[in-house]
Image (cartoon, rainbow, N blue to C red; front, top):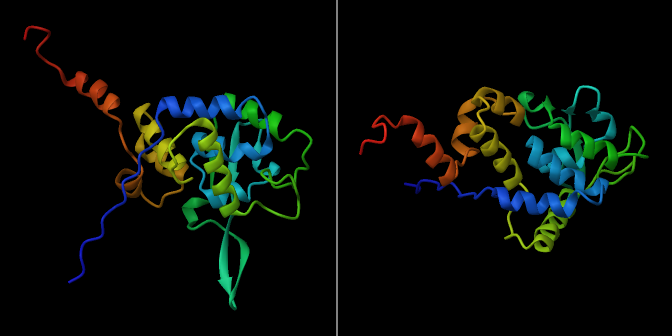
Amino acid sequence: KLPAAKQRKIEPFSSGELAQLGKALLPSGNHKDVGILLSANGGLRLGEVCVLRVSDIDFQNGTVSIERAVQRVRQNGKTKLIIQTPKSEKSVRVIPLPNDMMAYLKKAVSGLSQNAYILTGRTDKPMEPRTYQYYFESVLRQCGIRKRSYHTLRHTYATRCIENGIDVKSVSEMLGHADVTTTLRLYVHPSLDSKRQAIQKISFLGGVA
């Protein structure tokens, strides 16, 4: 009998850590930093960010369209980057973004072609996911933040959405999940502070105790 698989515990970034990331990345307006902030503000996967084009951003409506993903696969003893549709039908989606994120995006992609991949600034080559993971880790070191995987940004986004009262169905659709069960089971990690605040709402003693 095989042992039960244990789910790896993921610790989302705290509000303080997100503030540190913002402080480090916002002043530059560097298009290479866009992916980190997009995943923190929109829950994009690493493979989705790496192949995002300027044309996928709708500045008028404040949204980003996810229509493709990239990954490195092994073929005939070698590896190559493959651009394909996202992992499921639900993963093709349109995500609304905060106004401050849209303002940052407009500045960061200024001067780039509509067909350019945002993270590389080139029309012929997307960002290599592994390279961007390494870049992300270097940003964390620069900020003095403990090393986490890039995917932690996605978990952080989901958790913050739920903590701020966004309904689970909407969060699930913005993450590109097939059903809300996946969202709740894997991607929501309420902090102790949020639990503290929530539990006060069930108080009924009226301060008499």
